[in-house]
Length: 347
Image (tube, rainbow, N blue to C red; front, top):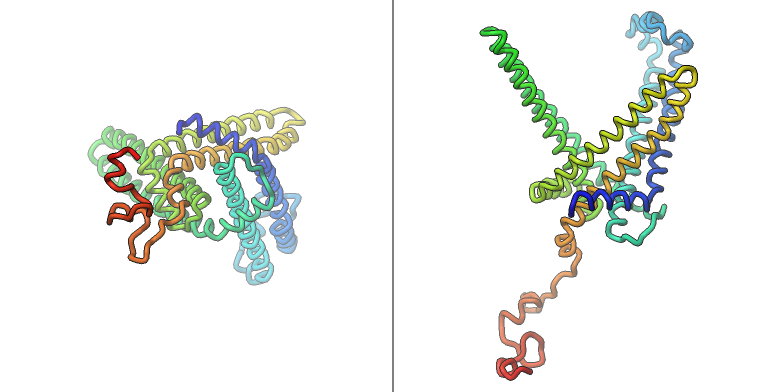
């Protein structure tokens, strides 16, 4: 499957399921309002009790004066501090759960649209796919988080090693230390970029394995790694669409910054523009996912067909039905090839 075909397939799938973009935007508004309800109200109550004037938040000395002795404040308002922290953790948990559910429903609808091009978006299908993929995606998210921690640890080791080498070189000659610092920094940047892109591509294609094949978190991760090793063009496609997504996001943010510079009405227009910008970014992100899922599906269509085909029948003797004609001769009229004399006569 060519890159252009995969990207066109991504646009076609999301245009047919444009309701997914509305769901993304609605979830963003719900999370925004939920922050003020779950976190903002207890936080405002805490500021009032602590004696912080909310109208003077721009004055940092008020904040420093209020929190000059945090141990005394915590001992005096320990229950309220626990309430604020609990509300914050509750908000984060709810947002993550809703985000995983929406992501699972979205990739489930996308995978169904790839397999059935005539199908249309249905809310019940979205909900059923979200339920089906919710817990597998939680486990997969934990695995990916561990991988990112490992990547950060490896990059930290490389950074420490480079710092040690540059420090030793600085004792010998400053010019050599400057050269080695720039050289090794470029190498570290390339390694970091490669590791991050590989990890992100494994994450996206692992989600594709989970949505299309219904595999578990560990199996999806392993299958995603094998898939990228077998199909290098899939990784190049990910880099291409990811670069396109970053370019679109950069253009959108640049326009928002330019609108904010307009006198008087600039901030209001920028706030309204953020709504349209989020729609554009959500659409671009869904197109990116759909293009990668299409690439995965068509490159592994043969393997998927073998997995979905019915198992071969087994005879009482233990041999499969497909091997009967090759293992022993059969009587005429019982399947397999006809007798030798009939084949010679042309019948």
